[in-house]
Image 1 (tube, rainbow, N blue to C red):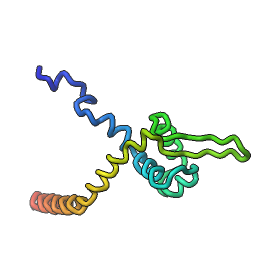
Image 2: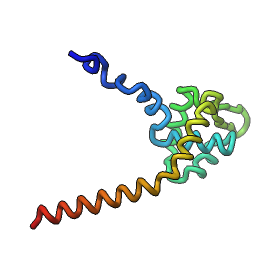
Image 3: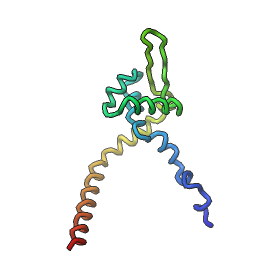
Image 4: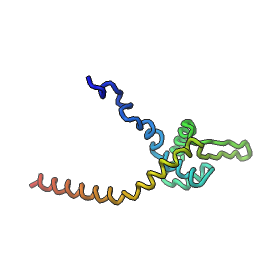
Length: 130
């Protein structure tokens, strides 16, 4: 068998593990908010990312803390206070996010390509029905 058959599917693309960590649903908005606005409490993050549920925000923050991308600081006061901030490891993703932000100028091209594709598909569907 060829070399490709010797590679496990999850290892076929060397950036796949990075994509799984960094681009899991909600990870990017959380890291972006912490990077752009600094240390924040849970409710501040929740307000900034209005479409996320508290349960999902809790889960994602725990995973990001586990991955070393976010630092959680607990202050034992009354009432207790918890703050989240992006770690140095999380900050090291800034060039990646900057590149993606720069690439976003292409979103108009993507939208036009989608529209053209959809129009072709619609035309094919009409031709099949005839």
